[in-house]
Image (cartoon, rainbow, N blue to C red; front, top):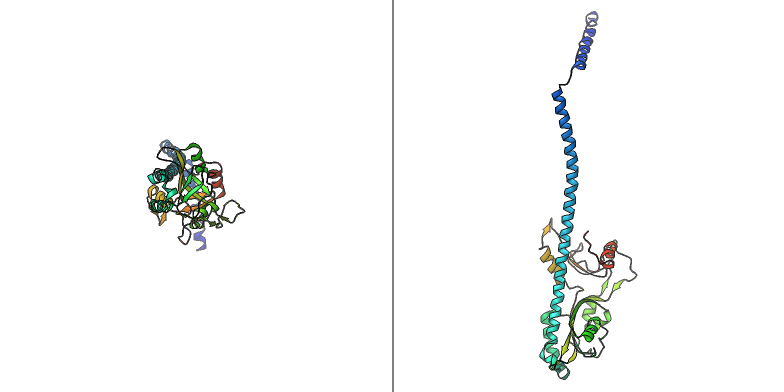
Length: 307
């Protein structure tokens, strides 16, 4: 058996040697080479265009998203300014009331106060008052016992005293001034800061002033003589009407995977005073603060932040 198996090895090696030699001598047809070359070029071009296309599409998506944010911010601003304009209309209406123009508030303060209190509640004003021609308060609707203080130093009342034209603006009102109007307003404005990641360092632990949409208008008597100033406003701290209106109008309450696709917040400096951003327990995240980089760009530089 041993002698029969030995001669077969050389024959097998010979066959393999012939096969390898044949493969070496084989030539790839030119047509095949052309096809393979064409496919290689197509592959390279396809990969290149694919990478470039993804980058272009990605850039377009980002640009579209940023433009959408910019449009949403403009819509939110218009809603905010519309609320301010309506407050201005209400204060001008008060200044034009006959019982205000004829000086009834000096003669029959209780009756006028009752009428204006009903108007204030009906129109949703947090503050409503009347000063004389020098800026001294003669009637404070929300706190009738508090009168006689000088409001000529107030930014809006002071402008009306000088120009005798109606004005409206967003104002920061101190805690002391809010207490003159209402102790409840002063408490509503106060926030203890909630520790917030990436917020800028601040030495204070709380905020006692408030942000108010405020308006003032001149009062002219029936002989068209300037006799005083009517002022009124809405405190934005813990007032969620505007932010919820923005969310409903701009984002239409749409959710994705159970989460809101958009929220709105009003900041006083870097402090959230009105928002529909929620904490983990579903409460509103008022008292939290904005990230330092956003604060610097928006508050310090006055530019939009679009992410």
